[in-house]
Amino acid sequence: MSITTPTKTKFWIICREESKLTKQLAKTIADWKLPGVRARVGHQLSLSVADAIAQADYAIFVTLCDYPCAQLQVTPVSTVQTKPMQSPANLLNTLRRRHGRAPQAWWFQLPTTEIRAQGIKHVSAEQTLSQTVRQIEVFVRNYYLQPLALQAASTQKPVAEPKRKAPIHIAA
Image 1 (cartoon, rainbow, N blue to C red):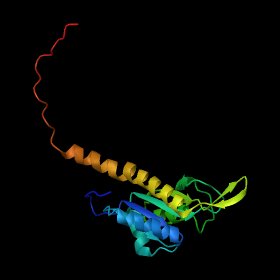
Image 2 (image 1 turned 90 degrees about the vertical axis):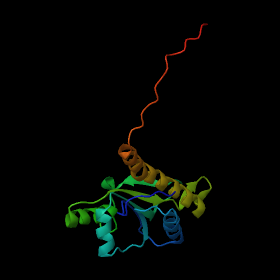
Image 3 (image 1 turned 90 degrees about the horizontal axis):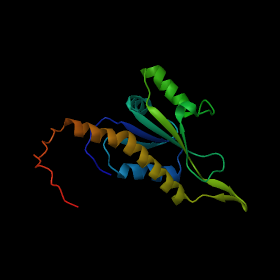
Image 4 (image 1 turned 30 degrees about the vertical axis):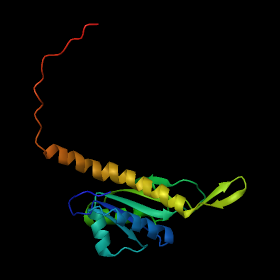
């Protein structure tokens, strides 16, 4: 994915836990080289990073799921109910109080284990990474790239339609 865009970071992907999986996810997103899309790994955020997130339009918080599930869990942050100190909602509320705004955000919980009839089974890192990258790509396309394409289309001069000849009637 590559497109020329403004330099403002519009979309943040924040991996809240340092693991091999979240590091690979952040690297994959960085390899897209989309201006305005940033990924970061780490539980603690510096004030400068938190300030940058506050100015973004969108944010995705990524954590490992703490209960068995086979699929990526995606939740709008406004509905997340979790421990206050670890909650993406808590961070967004802090940003809103400090800056008067916060990005629209979602919480992605990555599957690591699932319950099967045979017992608890680990979900492969490749499967989890693939699910997560595909879902983040959908969000980036829908919330980031599509509005840019519409904006670019609206700034282009309209193309005059060619003159049409009289319709041709074909006898049956």
